[in-house]
Amino acid sequence: MNIPNRHRRARGAAAVEFALVCSLLCMLLLGAMEMGRLLWTWNAAVEATRFGARLAVVCDMNDSHIKSRMISRLPTLKTSNITLSYLNPPAAVNSCSPADCKAVRVALSGYTHKMILPFVPLSLSLPPFATTLRKEYMSSAANEVCQ
Image (cartoon, rainbow, N blue to C red; front, side, top):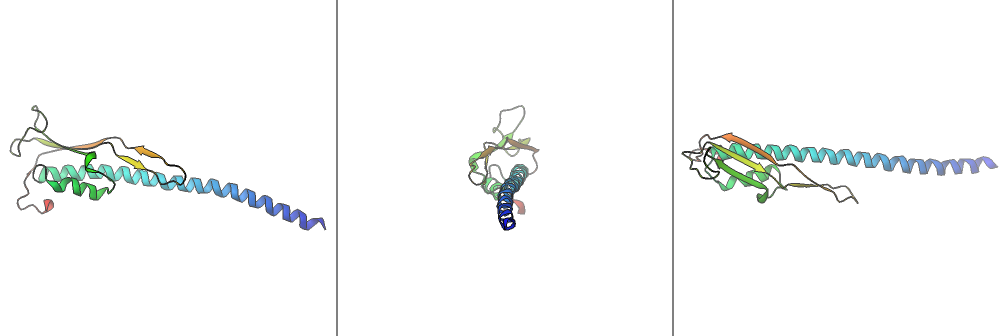
């Protein structure tokens, strides 16, 4: 008659072991998913700066669509995180016209990635990203990219 009691205790031990192992595996799975989200956000931030720089060299100076189209690449991005600079070396930054500008720099800074892990409210500040490209047209006339 002791055999059923032994099985009952063994089932309880197996349930406790399963709960411990399952919680560790769930934490590992959530951590891997969050790491994937972070890397996706990092890549989207880099691509948004590249895309913004590309738009800035072919569209009109300070075109309003540049920042909004960058935000379409990374929806949680804010316009306050984006800096658009028109360069005319050796002159000062932002002191050039489309005729004499040499390059455009688009920078993204101050962006914070918020993690979605339950019970762990973490956020991570991404490093600043910047892309500089040489001037091309800087004119939206007959340019479908800027529309």
